[in-house]
Length: 385
Ligand code: ADP
Image 1 (cartoon, helix red, strand yellow):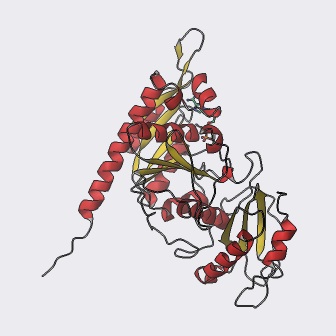
Image 2 (spheres, rainbow, N blue to C red; image 1 turned 60 degrees about the vertical axis):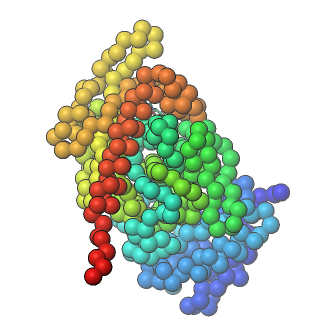
Image 3 (cartoon, helix red, strand yellow; image 1 turned 60 degrees about the horizontal axis):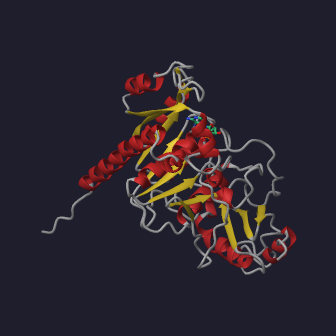
């Protein structure tokens, strides 16, 4: 079936009325960012931040309207709040995504999800974060998730790195999520791990231009409108950096803990420190730091070279009072396996790298367990008099 066009979507949405103004949401300039791929449609409705929660029925109606169109398999609609109603619709954003000055306009409790609300069936959520991009955060998230799964736990992996979603490629998944009930998406699965990524809905090389509130809604819907089933842990590959999007995510997602990935060349690990402080600010326990690309393994002679000041992360972790979770070398096998969709933890499970990742996974799992047990102990008891 031919791909649905943007015009067809707009025509249908022309029948959806904003209950306050009585005007339809297309004429009101509220519909933005329409994306379609293989029958999956996503777009945003811009609303006044004050009206965020009250707009949920409108969001649902828009979603239902588009979902009912022929050839549409799923429709994902997010509410965004950036401009005041009544002003002209903004032109499509051209510049870099959320950063300072693009702070989240949705207040707590607005939008589809409530702050701090757990996902039913998901016992714990951990964030894998880095102070900057390109340090191997996604590679670590994938191998950590697979390492925890290898120990027999039920694991989900959510790609919150919406600026550069790499989970479809790294996990070797090419399909698109389907929705059985028209409300929740089924995550895709490989190597025994359930995966959700915005990359399933748009091409990996499509430049993704997001503004703060849109990022937040998209992330929350990817977490909560996905049928994760029963999970021991949901591993979240965070967007790189420590900007508003990351901070809001750390605040609004009930994280059990965070793992920071860093490379030794950030000698003073200033970026890692920023990540750590961000989680501490919002009272999320930092489980520790993983040093990635710690040293170089020569594929020819097998010699180990300490190209950068190896060990910086261990020393810095000590200084910062958090644990050092382990080190992973710079090794071409790690790159080719993760970029080729066969992460080393599953493709070479008996090798040294898989062993390192499993050891890191075991430490992280112990920390998850301890954190959950401590929380349970702290939970108020009901006293019956
Ligand atoms: P980030 O998520 O921090 O942007 P990625 O995990 O996408 O980083 O890694 C960036 C690139 O570096 C990828 O091509 C990945 O395969 C490669 N890479 C990550 N860790 C290692 C490693 N330990 N050895 C070799 N290559 C690595």
